Amino acid sequence: MSRLKNIFAKLSPQKHETDSTSVTSFEEKCQDLGAFQYDNEGFTISYKDFSTRLQWNDITQLNAYKRDLITIDRIEMEIIVGDDCLTISEDLPGWFQFVCRTKEIYPTIPKDWNNDIIQPAFATTFMTIYDKSKLASNG
Image (cartoon, rainbow, N blue to C red; front, top):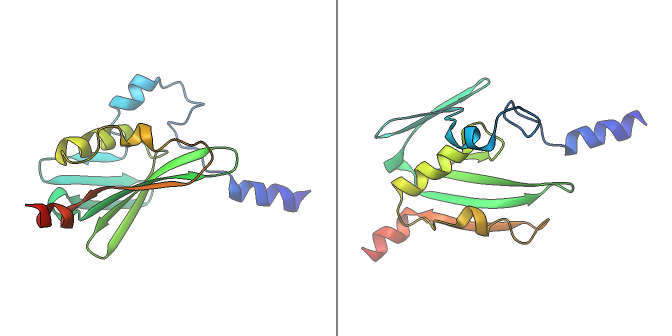
């Protein structure tokens, strides 16, 4: 029984302070900057023992996808800067504000990508929502 419990624990995503069991309302979550600090040039993500600073102009691609985690789906985003990739998920405090800010900074991002990506349920979906190289070739 202990072995099964350990396997299940590894499959279950870790809950964050702003998960569905908290008393924070959805509206509060949408306004919460969470792990992010913003300025005109970029942002800093600081969460637990991790911290990094990224410039908006340095981001070359944003890929969004939904992962099937058996009992739930989770939306994740790859932030690509050159050859480096940072992956964040909707579980990260400040996710909703980050999604809104990316749509403001990069007007070519589809406005409804985060609604479109959730279908179909319990299936992996993937989309590139921003690609700097395609903008340069179209301009």
